[in-house]
Image (tube, rainbow, N blue to C red):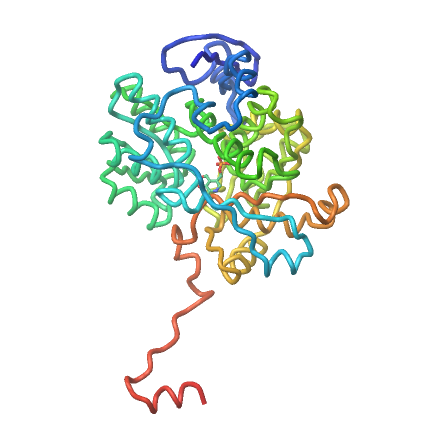
Length: 405
Ligand SMILES: Cc1ncc(COP(=O)(O)O)c(C=O)c1O
């Protein structure tokens, strides 16, 4: 498929068949301590996009710039919608549903990006992929690597949840824990590809990550009977997922399949709020993030400028939630049968916090999607001190009677 690149910062547009990362004009020219500049958006051919409006159904594959060979090897997409009735009744919003990307092969939304990176790698005949991750992107890429026989080199902060790291080790990736933050791991992985070659899959740095993540919006459009939700709540750290969600709706809009891009809410932790702050103040300064919701703990949001520009263009807004609100939301969700990791739960927490504003803008029947991006199994340690296993009973009838009397 024909596509070109557009720089989000300086607007420079160009076409190339090579693998590119940041804008050749302004990439890396940001002032110290501010969000990176020069991240690229993929623009699909507009005539091609409009031709899609004649199809009775579209799939995410119609919108991806690279083919995905044998998608059944690593099946990404078609995640279910769940309507957690006990919770929606409690908040009085009947049109709220959760998009369960917790069901993807490696248990997180990041499989969407990794699938397209596989397409990119195979199209270019490259077998090695390096990346940095807070855990989920690494597990997703490692899962894809195991499925297709690719070599994955993964740089992660050594403090990442053990389940995420073990997943990547089990899939057979070369895991390199770093004594530093995610942002440190990000820079080291770029050094790795500069020295040893291969594709770099860093979130947002490789523009195909955002492009892969857009598949969720196209899927939602078909799943809801060729309609889009009024509002989508998206847990946000680096800003890559929210940019991908926007990009999918943007492409549907360019294809003349929808009349408007939904309102998208950027859900951040109060302790990792770089994008929310930049949206509010117009100042793109890095922060020191410290939330327990590790997947959205980001100092220097790679896709921050793109996320803010989409939010401004299409009327999005941001909601910040406290640590307690995130952990309470996680517990509310699991007690309603929906098991999500803390970062994902931040989206539900934001919905609860934003409820009255949502009703005033969109009414009680609004069609609202809460994007659940990672399964609760990813981080069981977060329950330490909050939930414990009951003591065992003796193997006897008397013990049962005693236990329940
Ligand atoms: C489960 C989960 N939710 C949300 C996010 C936030 O995505 P982004 O960093 O692209 O904003 C991540 C990123 O790692 C994630 O793994």
